[in-house]
Image (cartoon, rainbow, N blue to C red):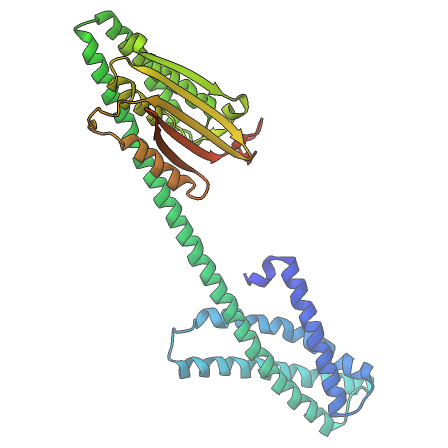
Length: 362
């Protein structure tokens, strides 16, 4: 189908343009041989309507011979032939119409004037069809550019989704590895605690798998998953680990990528509380401000403790996921001050509407 016929507004604009061309032709015929304006309009009007649709054939002519598909001279000869054929058809239709008007209604010039009109019609036909060819080549170039842009965006989206899946796949084994280490440490010294930790770990893994299968989850669900994880670690660290939360209700409804907060909480336990003999308090805070969600995880750390293996891996995964999801308005900032380590997430404050699958920006 011709792209012009896909939308009514395009058809309307095209017909309006040809009304202008019909008026110009009417004026041309009056100038060539003085006659009543109405007679010239009766002759030019139907012919203009016929050629308006005949010029649409340039779309298929241009598609069959894309620019660069043939040597320039051969392509020019092909296009010139198409323009001459179209103009010849239009001139033949004009001759039949002129004879009909002259014989049936007595409208039109004499034989010499009729030949002059037909010659003007042929020249105008070649020019108009050539212009139609140029316009259609421009339309094809625009269509090709849009298709290339669409393919590029689809390729970028596929690459981004593949990266997200790869990063997400790195997280679950990381959780399991650390938790099994914790259970291993308790098996000999406190079998009951190890059993309880296995049960809590099972609950945590079930929840993490359910959340990980969804593209976005509410922050409240992420916080609940963090509570499952901290319950597991609480068995190991006992009183050395404490948690405080300062989360606004409006922030809990905001949507975030699944398993995004978990690496920050795990990092706070592993590289913060676990590195200190006296342990410490992990503080989790979240607020929504001016269309942006801010989530922070803060923990104490031992500045003199040597770096532990794997330090920074969870933070790097979070940072890369945010860059893949929304590099313009999402990110991760970390800071160290007065013996406290703070990881700050910021994302657009998106919230799912009730009864809908979509989301809107708050």
